[in-house]
Image (tube, rainbow, N blue to C red; front, side, top):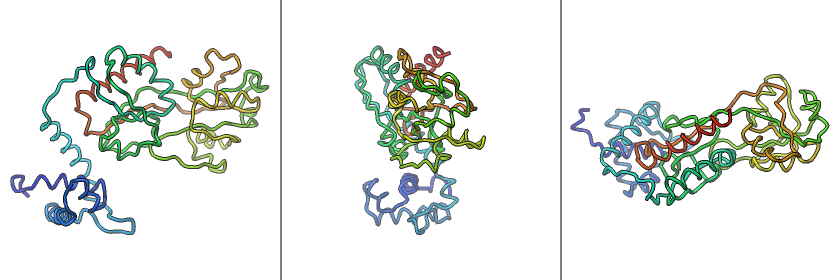
Length: 317
């Protein structure tokens, strides 16, 4: 089909349909009737000579052609939106914009005190609304309802922009009077009882059991590679809790090193040790929707966070 004969409004319909995978919800999102959306889907099928969405036991399932089109149409509509929006400069010193940012408590503790300090100097009226991973879904981020997400991600949708803020390794935290602190090796590590702490990705978390330790994260995956398994008796998603828990002499927590150093700093009751086996480093990433990629205020905030992260990474060396 030639471009001059195409109804480009239909691409907006297709973008929403592929996101919602439901004709009724897509119609509600666009503020049109369901028959109008159904008619739009019929015309889209004619335009691309493909069914695009087919009914299945799980609802409407995109075809291979639709999955191929989805990121290209999202990128094109994002660029078009930037062209049509009136250009506005962002003045940090006078802005009272609210930034909604999903942040893990690891990033909240290790990165955001410095971010807030920089904001108080450069943009004192800007408001931060800090959300937890369980508060946010990938759809919230994709639609720009949340400005950005900062976390350790197992995976990020391909349509999102992303940048690595820093890399971190792991340290073991224990009571300084724990007998194994002076003879810390793989055997004493495995004989100890452990506090598990982690939360990655987005959306509501799920319960865990000690039998599923291999799926619990980097530490247990590293142990699995050498054919070992630790004994876990406490599970938490909060990185500040282990420092209190390991004051029990029989507990050990394996934490990201930045968090471990933060908790042990100025606390003589805690001891840090290197893990007695190799755990690969992980990346703290920032991800955001292509809808906000060119927004001047959003771009400024991203640059501020990246600057603060680079400075913090340099200071940590």
